[in-house]
Amino acid sequence: MSLYATEVNQLTAAWLRRTEGAGVLSGAGLWPLLAVLAASADEPGRDELAAAVGLSADESMDAARDVLKALADLDGVDAALGLWAQQAAQVRPEWRDTLPAGTFGELTGNAGADQPVLDEWARERTHGLIERFPVQAGPELMLTLATALALRTTWQRKFSDEAWQVSGGAWAGRRLAGLERTTPDADDLRVADSGAGPLTLTRVSGDNGLDVHLVLGEEGRASGDVLAAAVPLAADGAAVTSGAALLESGAVERWPGVSTVSAQRPGLVLRTARFTVRSLHDLLREADVFGLRSVSAGDRGHFPAIGPVPLRVDQAKQAAVAIFSATGFEAAAVTAIGLRAVSMPVHRARAVAVSYDRPFGFLAVHRESGLVLFAGWVDSPEDWSAPSQRAPRPGAMRDRLPRHTTE
Picture (cartoon, rainbow, N blue to C red):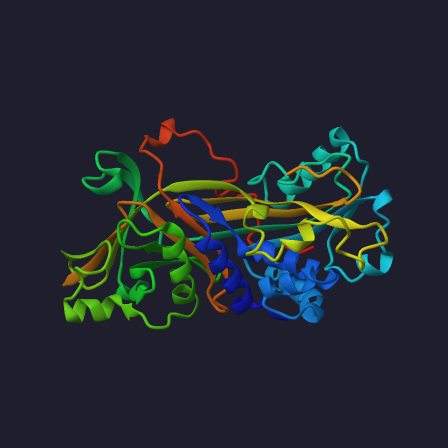
């Protein structure tokens, strides 16, 4: 069983290079869907999808099954696949039987009946973090294929939760919901030169093999470039300098956000801000990145393996959320691709310190494999409020959410 971390991370990095500003995305949630489509399409879409997946189309279906199974087996991660189709789509049973195990349902073509079913699946599979299925139901939606990915980890070392008055940068003058902790392992901080300039990464370790890497680049650098450059560094740690080595060299000032402070013993002082980030991505806006250009265009069908009805991609969207708090991190994404019949009308002593006191990125990584599960950018963290004044956040660190479930 393989996570295909290299191929998934390549898709994630390519997607990040096309993004700008705040948001969160999951290449790991999208990749299995593209792999299924690659195995099901004819040319030229078959080659385009295979290129986006990073594998040959002939091996893509097996890879999709492997990735979804391996994700669901990770501690703290839930992964699921769903397929819904109208009877008029005439889906071949032999094609459906090749799909990864999941939920299979029927669409009526009535949005009033179908949308609540899809929305409920999204809520259940993400433990309430995603409330709406990203693809819209209706008579034109002949078939939709979706993945749901949810993760949760609790920090091995918690943060203190306190007000943080930022003195400079883009957040100057704001009183943020600050998080701070001091740990003995300075090597949780790593720095590296990259194609996006000098980068600072700080690993925050979870208790179940999942880590979150906070990423800071030079001021003025595009967020997508910074995060794309950070993906290989977070995944395998190549070409990085550790915080302990920085302390020994004394050369800390050139690295974004890094300084030194007085402390009782060597270690790492980390200060950041609590955040909740939500995104809704229209994947067809970057159709060439995902191999969706040909299969979403033209006047003929592109997926003969699915059935005799000519189908093309009409919708491709991902809804994602990430929550970073004093006690842990949780994130979820529902990615869905909707197909329609082509005959229908188409609608378009010294301690090293790091301070994330201006817009920064984050990567959620499976520690052992290096697979990047979620990536995002924060440009508007939460403002400080007393604990008694805080409204409950949907899905945030619920006791009822299991660390690991499988179907």
